Structure formats: structure tokens, C-alpha cells
Image 1 (spheres, rainbow, N blue to C red):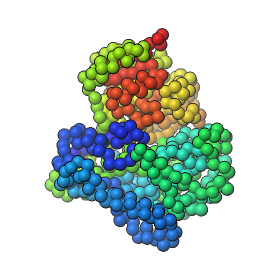
Image 2 (tube, rainbow, N blue to C red):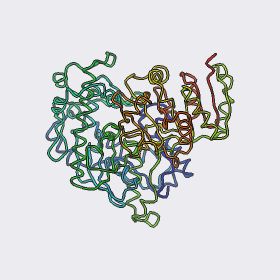
Image 3 (cartoon, rainbow, N blue to C red):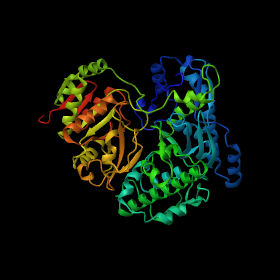
Length: 573
């Protein structure tokens, strides 16, 4: 609204279905309420898809590859779906839109989602993901109020498809499982790097090409279905990959060492291609600043090595680097291009808004939480829990910190929900990073997830240099750094097998309550960080107090802090 972000939330948080796909009516309703406006009040709508863009490339692909007609029919349907978004809105809300609808190329929206909300006056820009508008990668430059694309990598070549196909091969079949491969990789060695170089061929200009005989996304109609609006993707690789690497792992098969070695090799190949892109980008735009986005920018391990492997010295990564972030990117790009009196096209426009925190989702008052607690008082008591209210925030932080230091696992629900996939201290499960047994307990009893996956540290910004080998600001938990060797034994719960940690830096200015909690924990333990994992159990991160309470009651969490209210489980019951 008027050049500033007032609300952002993903539909999956409201629908309670991971990766929900469809018209995001609940998220739209929330954003309109938060902005104090109606759909009729909106002047401009931005959509991060541009039907018809890169059509010459599409035609060339059809003529040279002769893909399955069903594949092209699916792509035509996708184009029509993007074109008719305004019709879908009018039908869903029963109103005639007066807003002008702008279609922004997918990767241009990604670039804008990083550069146009950063504090950079100029930056080299890179977007890397699966596909969008017939491209997988965009290389560009941002300056002042504008961002432009210089070069693209087009369909069917894609680092995102490479990583997804190998994720399936290793036995993680679900949409969005790539982070599991990233977590598994440190348990292996890059013994399969040469075969990976057979799959991905880095070019002399820094771009890349896939060896397409190992992939089937470009010739066959790889199914993209929606089971209850959750995406499911068909097999992306061919039998040639099995000939090259051996039998694919079934999801229920045990993980063997060679699977871990393949995971390590996949990550190594991704980094090799990723850093080739970045170094070529810097050669073309020798600027110290980098704005990075796209679904592959969720690869926090590679992100954490950017300063070590490239000449870039400052980087901005948005909280939602994937497709959700394209909504903000599309909106900021359209705003930057408008020339009306209401939106003057001046360099000052960008400086009015920098996205330095992710707290843009729904918030719930203590009166709403009190009403919930009272309505479910008997159920809470039957589970052996006691309730109290702590209205002094310093005391609330001291008390919560003491419980964490005492080994309790705490569900922490405060303020506005985070934008993006990470829990950043408002919808978090917190624990003592000093406990060597806490990872196993969290994975088995609360998160119910694979034991090899690490947990993240949230650390006071002012303490990063003391505990990590790199000193940089990572407010959105988008980079993995090495923990200092002398500190690793002190915080085993957040030190991965290779001594790394995917950190979040916590600022007093952007989250004073979470900063106070960690400061209180430091006062008790001399450790300026806590274990922070998302508040969920194989579901989207909790949005409402009801979901937080439900998750607490059905898991083995010890304490729930909902606003000013503390619910403690009585271990003697």
C-alpha cells in the first residue's frame, strides 16, 4: 500500500495443506483486511507470470525436440491460467475489478523480489529455479529504481530440475523434498561428482546445459497433479540415470552410504554450476553487491559459501526466495515502473521501503488467546497442563529462558507470522542447543522427521563473529556457516555433522521480544543462541493460536507460550 509492504502470507498456512496450489483467497482476504482496503480499492494487480514471453524460444524447442503433445497442451493450459487470473478473481469475489492487471515475467519478478526491497543502490542479480515462463535462470543488474535481465537459461536446461530429479532418485519423492538431500549431503563424500558432470555441463560463459538423455521433463508429459491441492510430480529422470548410477532408492528402503555419497555429489555439482554462474555474473557486472532469488536460492549451504567462492562481498536474499516471493517481486517491479503522480518514478521511491524483516503475517491479540484458553480449559487440564499469564514481557522472557535452559522444549507463538518458509522467532519451537540428546528427541517425538536433518541456531546478531567463522547478517535463515571449532562441542544440538549451522541473526530492532528471550538465555548460560525449528508437525507452520495449541497437545512439547499465556505440561501426570 503506497509503496510499503503491509501484509504477506502464503495460502498453505490458512488451508493447512503444504504447497497448496490454487487461487489464494484466504491470503488475499487477510492482506485486504490488514491493509484496511477492499478489492475495489486496488489500483494495480501484479502477477508473476507473463503469457507469451519467450515465445520464439518455445517455438524453437517444439521444432527441434518434438515433445509429447500432451506436454505442450499442459503448457498452453498453464499460460491460459495465468492470463485469466483477473477473471478468476472477479468470479471468486463477485465484483468487477477496476484494477489494472500487470503480468511480470517470472524471473524478472524473482530479481525484483531481491533487488527492489534491498538497501542496494546497485547490484548484480541472479534468479535460479526450476522453470517459469520457459526459463530456469535469469542474469541481470539492478540500479536505482530498475532491474533488467541480460541473459537467460531456457527450458529444458535447469539446475532446479537436476536437483529435483536426483532428489527423486535418492528416494525423496515429494514436491519440495530437495532440502532433505541438502541435509543428507554432509554424511557423504563427492564420489559421484564425475557422473554428475555428465548430467550438468558447465559452459565457458558460466551458464550450463543438462545432458538431456538422463531427463524426461522435456519430451514426456511428466505429470504434475494436485492431490487435495497439494502438488505431486512424476518421475523426472530416465532409465539412463539408473544405468549411470545404479538402482534408484525406494522411499521405504534404508539409506545406505552410497546414497549419502550421491547426495553429497549432487550438492557439489549444484555448487560448481552455481558459482560458475555467479563468477560470470560478476565478470559482466563487477559490483560487490549480489541480489539472489529463485527457488534454488533456498540452497542455504551454497549461499553460505558465496563470499568464499566468488568476489561478491554483500548479498541480499529475500525471506521468500521461491515462487511465493514472486508476488512481492511482481508488485515492487510494477510500482517501480509506474509514472503517475501517486507513484513518482524517482530513485527515492526505492529507499522508502527495505524488507529487513519477515513479520508480515497474521497477529492475534491476548484477548483472542485468552478466549481460546478459557474455551479449552478442561481439555488442557485433562492433559496434565497448568496455565498462567505473565503480562510483563521481561519476566516472560526470563521465565521462558529458564525453562529452555532446564531442558524443556518450548512452543513459542508471538506477534505476526513470518513470511517465507522459515520460522524466525514468532512461530517457533525452541530448545537448548547445549543438549546432545535434544535432536533425537525432537526428530522422533515432536517433528517426526528424518534423523539426519539438522536443527538451526537463532543467534544474537552481535554474537555471530564469536561463534561462527563468517560474520554476516542472516536475518532470514538463508545461509549455512561453519561454527567455530572451539564452540561446536558447546552447542551439539545445532551443529550439523560437518560442523555447520543454518543460522538466523536476531536483531533487537526487528524482533525485540525474541532478542530479549535469547539475551535472557545468554544471561543464564553464556550461550547467545537457541535451537529454533518451525512450529509444526508434518504440516504447514502454525498460523493461528488454535493450531499452536493443537500441535502442543498432540506432541511431546513441554511448554507452550501463546502471547502472554504459558501452558506447562506436568511431567508427574
